[in-house]
Length: 168
Length: 168
DNA sequence: TTAAACTTTCAATATTTATTGAAATATACT
DNA sequence: AGTATATTTCAATAAATATTGAAAGTTTAA
Image (cartoon, rainbow over the protein chains, first blue to last red):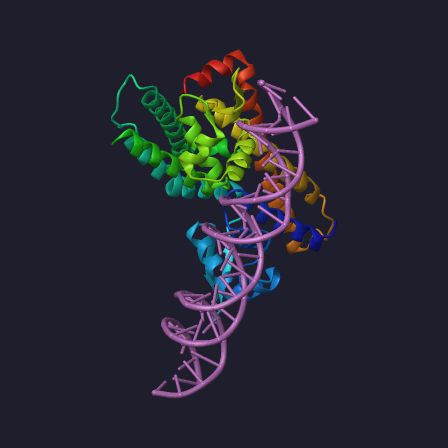
């Protein structure tokens, strides 16, 4: 397979995967494009390569920066802004995990905690089943949360840090 | 908080969470409803409780069955079909992991393998970066795949099976 | 201070995805 | 074999989501 074709397929697949996991397809594609670019790209280059509008490119790049996956670069003597993607996949994975934990896991944990305090008749099967389900989900979610927390702190920890490097 | 209100909030939150992870909101809501129902429900009951159409209820219930999260029950002397959701959260998590692995992870692994064989000039930075990124992602994805594989086989294994019970 | 270069915003529009509902099909009982 | 009951299908429609593009805003330098 030629490089140009391979790039195209990679960008498409990354976009599809993103959309299956609730991430805007274009955002995933822009990320893919930057990931396989040795140098930082300008908004113009992103627009041209993915055939998207200026507004879309601008918003998508900002989102990627908010996700901590892309950084702005400025070059002396130039007005244009350049965008560069973090290339280390483990760092990317950690970053995504961190954001999704914050945006989604933590709010649901908070709600589950509240729902566990529901009042009702202990003899009522409706009440029993509700409470059991909520409690069980809460336990699982708390475990996931704790595990992620450990993972995210791993980099600061010499022992786990060295273990995770084996995955790279 | 009253049971009725708590149920409502749980169903809404589950739907929202689902949609953030690429799962049809209604499907997640129907799943939530069945999860907190002690008894199996009919299509009619699902339609009424969530205010959705018959067609939608039917398709969504079929999807949930295909995901292995819900089973049809039939009761002797009755024509209607009843739907019951698996209640064990660990089994649910395993089932979701299994399906997403099969539907999404495996296809992308296959593609990544192909993309790694891209032809090009070893001196070309474009080529180098592409190849490095694809190889790294492939490694991470393979590790995730192997880890999931182990997790999914755990139930068949007395030792891990008993460990996982600790999470409940 | 003016103007060119570049970035951001957001209402309008397009695209994608989900839902409806009625007709077609299937099932079981008399 | 007829009929009432239940389920499935899917074209039409609605709703949600993403994208455009042009105007407004910002920055830099002469």
